[in-house]
Length: 164
Image (cartoon, rainbow, N blue to C red; front, top):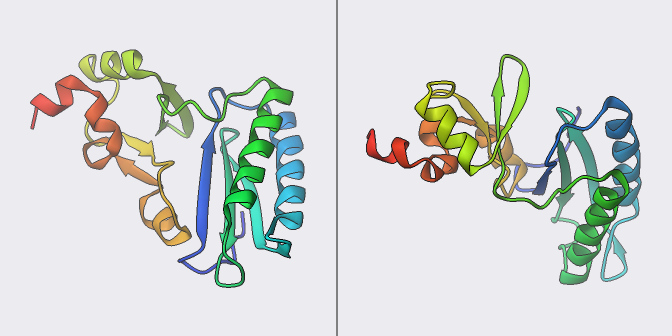
């Protein structure tokens, strides 16, 4: 993945509720790139691009130094991601799923399995978790994967809060 955007470029990350097949990733990547290339804000073309990472995440990036992202352009992107999700049977909007990176694989937890994994030591304070809440490309470079102990995910594990 080659990203040629400034650190202040806006970034939106959509996490799939399941791993995408290689074929789905390729199809979604083509569609989302086409969307990004034709994305407009108030009739003005945006400088944008999109990527699928780890067969699990869709990243949409826009350099707002050229044109700011407006409400209608954001609505269009959300609508487009929902369409892609419906077409492939994927939910990109479940914010109660947490994705970690272990042994070269993305592992997805819901709140219950996250707590169970922590209590059984399958994950710990050093386990890397993806941070889909980053807002800029600079934040992405610094905070895309962070240890659980420094992650927003930690607040969803009752045992982790007590252990500090």
